[in-house]
Amino acid sequence: MGGRANGRRAWWEDGMSEIVRVSDLTKAYQGGVTGALNGISLAIEAGEFTAIMGPSGSGKSTLLNLIAGLDRPTGGSVTVAGTDLGRLGESGLARFRRDHIGFVFQFFHLLPNLTALENVLIPAQLKSTTSAEAAGRKLLEQLGIKEMADRYPAKLSGGQQQRVAIARALINNPALLLADEPTGALDTASGEQVMSLLAELHRQGQTIVLVTHDAKLATRHAARVVSIVDGRVVDDARLETTERAAADVIRVRSEEMTR
Ligand SMILES: Nc1ncnc2c1ncn2[C@@H]1O[C@H](COP(=O)(O)OP(=O)(O)OP(=O)(O)O)[C@@H](O)[C@H]1O
Ligand SMILES: [Mg+2]
Image (cartoon, rainbow, N blue to C red; front, side, top):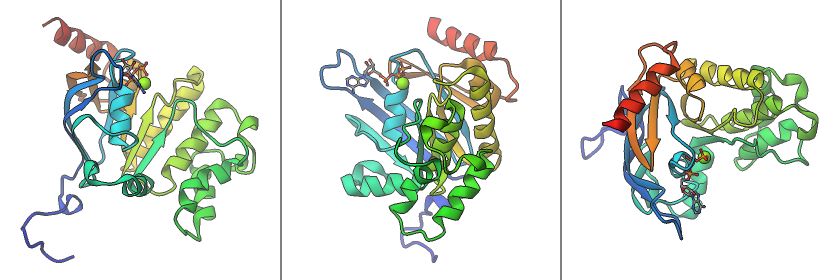
C-alpha cells in the first residue's frame, strides 16, 4: 500500500481509526408527523462499545438501520469504515453490508428451515469461502453452543437462538457489530449471558453499537452511552468505568433534558 496522491490516509491506516461518522443525519418517514431523526451527528472510534438509549419512538432503530445501510436517510450522511454509504447503489450497499456489518435483531430472525450452523453460514455462502463451515462451527463453540450446530431454531432456547444470530453476524468478520435490543426478547439470565458475550467480543477488539432500553445493561457493559430523544442526541457520556451505576447516566440525561 503506497502513499496516496492526495496525502490523505485511509481510515485503516490511522492509529485512531474512526469507524462510523454520522453527519447531520435526518430521516422523515412517509406520513410521519415529525422526523424520526432530526440532525444527528456522531463519530465512533474502532474498538468502542457504544450503547444508544432513549425512549420508545426516539429514533434508535432508525439510526442503527441507517448506520447499517438497511435504509436511506432523508438528509445528511453516514460513513462507515471510510465508505460514504450514500455513494453506493443498492447492490454496492448489499455487498458493503455483507462484508463490513454484522446485525443482531431483537427477535433473532433465524430461518426456521435451516439448522443453527446453516443459519450462521448464510452470509458466508454469498462469498465463496471454502472454510466457512469450520469457521461457523468455531464461532458456535466460542459462543458456547457448539453442540447445537445441527439443531433447528425451534429446538433452541431464546438465548441460544440469539447466540446463533450473533455467530451469523460475526461470520464475515465485520468491522462493525450492530445490535438492536438483542436482549429485548430474552429472560434476564439469557439477556445477561448475551450481554457478557458482547462485552467479551468488545474486549477482543470488536466495535459494537448496541441499542437498548435497559440502562443497567448499557452502563454495566458499554463504555459510552449516547442518549437520543425525539431524534436528537441529548447526551453522550463516556463512562469512566463500566461499573458506573446506571443511576448516574439517568441523572445526567434528565439534567440535560430539563436544561
Ligand atoms: N417504517 C416506518 N414508517 C413510518 N414511521 C416509522 C417507521 N419506522 C419508524 N417510524 C417512526 O419513526 C420514529 C422512530 O422510530 P424508531 O423505530 O427508530 O424508534 P425506537 O427508538 O427504535 O423505538 P423502540 O424503542 O420502540 O424500538 C417513531 O415515531 C416511529 O413511529
Ligand atoms: Mg427500536
